[in-house]
Amino acid sequence: MHANMDLAAPISRIMTFDPVTVAPGARASEARGLLVALRVHHLPVLRGRELIGIVTTTDLRRVGPQGMFPSLSAVDAKLDCFLVGDVMTPDPVIVSPDDSIEHAVELLRLDTFSALPVVDGTELVGIVTSADVLGYMLDLLRAHDARRLVEAGGD
Image (cartoon, rainbow, N blue to C red):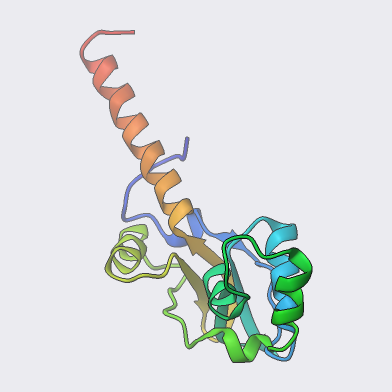
């Protein structure tokens, strides 16, 4: 359980620091391999040190082969035709490590994306996902329930 848990806490409390990134000139199939190997759904795209986009499993599905169950070789063959820069979502919505968790919740709630790159000045320092926020919210709810039990004299 997080200490001093509240929605005003900074995003840095729940973000993943130094996420794996990909370059816009990488093949989309390489990005797919990284997403699978890392068991994540989002990769920030950097040109040098500058965040220029984010590539997601959804972006790759959009350009991948159609059909219910394409083979992995068919997926990679199709994705080899694209560079990450061709398929990424450019200029993603970003947050600062000092922004509140509540701010991240609002941004994630208002749009269709589920990850926010965390940028300090011009430098990518992390990423926060809807899963990170939901985990934190679950911890908040459990802490609240535990307090209520204690106050009610329960065990």
